[in-house]
Length: 256
Image (cartoon, rainbow, N blue to C red; front, top):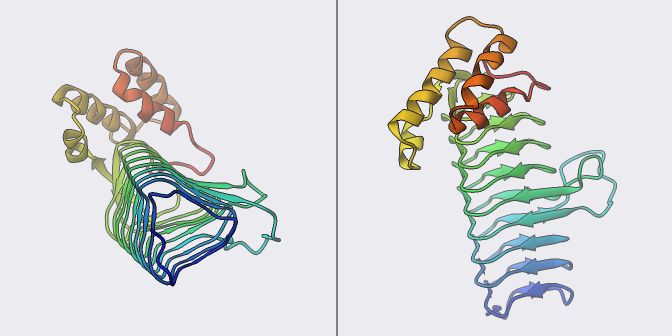
C-alpha cells in the first residue's frame, strides 16, 4: 500500500507488499523489499537498498548524502538488511568514494530515536543503538553490540561483537569483543556477562572470557604478551577467537 500523499519516484522499486505512509518521499534508485513498513514523513534517497520486514518510523532520513566536505556528488550507496527497526528521527547516510562507497546496516537491528549512522559505516546484526547514539564515518560495529544512550564513536573505530557501552560514553579507540565500557573517554569496566547469558553462553564460556579479559586488563602485560597467551587459549576455546581477533585491530589503539 502506498498512501496517496506519498511522493514516490517512478524509478523506485517498491515491493507490492510494502507499506508507504503519508507524506513520505522516496527518490530514484531506491529499492524496498516485501513487508517493509515506512511510516509518515520519512525521506529516503538513493541509491539505497532496503530489505524485507523493516519498520522505519516517522521523520527518519535514510540514504541522504554523506556529511563529508570531500563528497562531490559521486554515486555511493546504502544497504539495509531485513527486520530492522529504525525509530523516529534516525539518520543513516550513504558512503563516500574515499572508502568503499557503501554504508551497510545488517539485519535485526534496533535503532532508537535520533540514532545516527554516518557514511561508510558497517553495522552487523542484532545491535541496539539507544537514543541519540551516534557513530562517525568509517566505523565498524560487530554483531550484538549495544550502544548506550548518547554514546559517540569516533571515526574509523572498530567495536567487537557483544561489546557494550553505557550512557554518555565517548569511544575514541577500538573496543574489543565482549568488553563493557563507560566514561569520556571510555574506560573498560568488565565483560558483558549478562548479555552473554541472555544469548546462551554457558557459565564455562563466560568464565573463559572473563579470564581472557583479566589477562589483557588486570595482569599488567604488554598487548603482545597478552596476545601470545590468548592465542594459545583460543585454540582450545572457540569463544575466545573473536576477542583475540578484535585485539589485533590496533590502527587506532585499544580501549585499555
